[in-house]
Figure 1: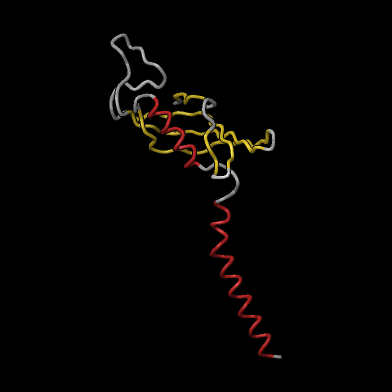
Figure 2 (figure 1 turned 120 degrees about the horizontal axis):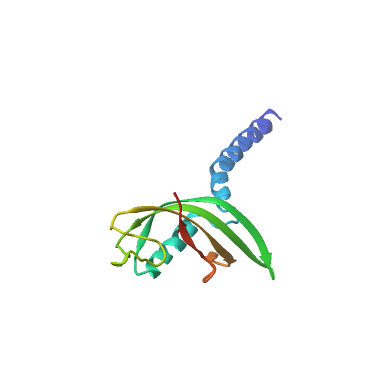
Length: 136
């Protein structure tokens, strides 16, 4: 009987160790898009503007989950720093979208992306991006 209690004790210890190792990975797949998903979406927007900028850092500031016709949606608000890769200000001081005067300028921006969940993960929903707005 003492031997069974000892075996059970070691099984519990092994189970506790296994849970401690696996738990952080389980929390990573929380069922919401990640900051990496938003970074990819923002980099894609920069590329669509003829490689105007690239994301230096991005932080999620808010989020809202919903479900439409059994499809999960998520609106992710963010703030980011982007680096200008080229200038886009013409000789009259006019620019379209993000104002990049000099290569290397760092701009603080904020915006919202909408994502939909598919079998292969969260995907940015094209055409739903609120283009980033420059903030102070």
